[in-house]
Image 1 (tube, helix red, strand yellow):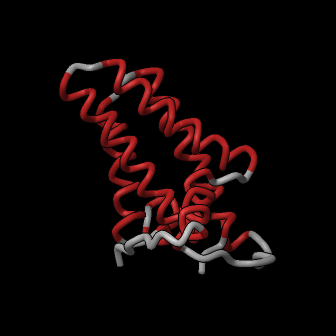
Image 2 (cartoon, rainbow, N blue to C red):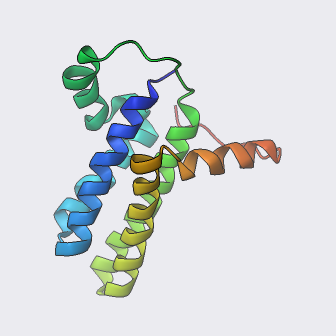
Length: 140
């Protein structure tokens, strides 16, 4: 179980990083964000550098969360993020600027929805897939 406020901070930081990538085209920053997503998939959202920042700098200053949420939906959202950033990096490597731009813009839009409105698109996809009776493999 994880604190949803940490996920919102992570989405805010991701939004900033991806906006900078979109504006500058910096492939190293894009690769770093892909790495953050990969850690979230492989080790869970609580293991990312953004979660560490939340735990050490933000969480101690807050009241306890009203409720905790399961880690599986945000972990699936991290998988969506790593998929989009992988396509963006493929665009960089192959010289397909349009692929890079579209993939980063889609990831940015999803991160922004969570940061600004608390709506995690990847989490919603996870829940709908599970409700449809489709098993989603875990990475733990």
